[in-house]
Image (tube, rainbow, N blue to C red; front, side):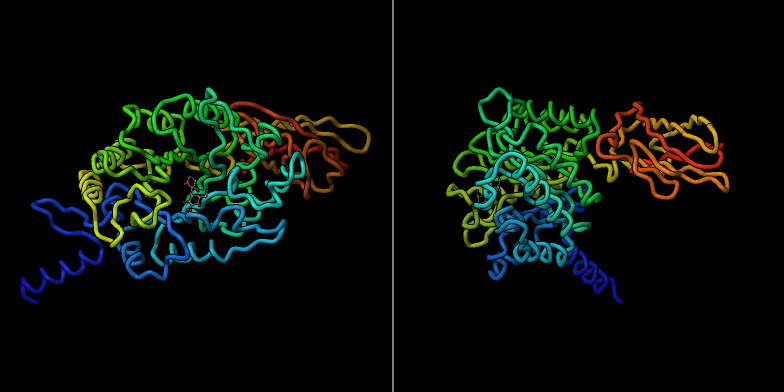
Length: 434
Ligand code: 9MR
């Protein structure tokens, strides 16, 4: 092959991967490819009903490497009548994302809006169990396929000093959010679990209320991995925007910009660039999603997106692309590795022999990471058997936490015991976090 042919073959290959040569530097030519240079994604909220529009789909497939269903995975869409689930719209979005090799964000398991009528009319423990069942069912249906779930959306109030929003869900008890996160983790352990909200795009009372909740969750071992800052913006950006992202990241959660759109007519291109730069500056800010593709696809009427109604790139698009190509910090792909089996906890056994049998008390101690569940394996001498256990369930000689003692803070302990026939174990029990 001649040099020229080689060069054009390389150019064709680069065009396919969205990379072009700009000046001396390599610069990606699409939002997704340029975000990927620093290990991030650039996504869009999409609607199943628009996927037949060829302009829409052309922009979607060429520019974005993450998708969020704008409405299709919400409670009213997925469980229109109690216990009867409909995943048709959600699955269309999921399959579009899979076909594109994109990350799929799940939105949203529980929210005070877009609840089906039957849920709106429930309250108390009936609503609580219906809500948790909803989380379990939907997260199970999409198990292993979702990059990050907005487990709870918009549960904090505006102008209430950082307190919760009143809603039917809130009235089931203040612990409804952690119950939802625990159910989501149990159903889909691979998905990152996010809390998502708006008007949290700077340091203010509302974002501080959320910050305090995340800090509390982390200290008690409630599973939470990320915070979504929606970023529905007007004509300015809060001067503490980046600082706010950073303070959440410093709690040990990822941050994602989840629903970005910016009013046109103010400083749109500059605000988009500032959001991009702020995310790139914080290594745990892992990606940005715009809430729609063209201005005409938006829920807003002030032309807040990156493409005009005809699908042309706007100035805001170019400013985002340039900001992405200017580079930034690189996220650690696995900032919170799961503990190695056995590394998350230790167990000690204290036997008490009595006529014809024994009892044993086992103390489980968490390592440097809080436990959200544990199992302990005991090696029994031959001829011995477990007859019953307390504060744990038993299968053979493997013991698992019960509902009230799976959560153990880092360094903390809990105890269970069992009774057996024969002689007590002599080997140290093996503890594993789960
Ligand atoms: O864009 C969504 C619009 O199509 C729906 O009618 C609306 C219903 O409340 O929800 C919009 O998306 C919202 C998102 O789910 C949560 N944050 C605010 C978004 C804009 O309202």
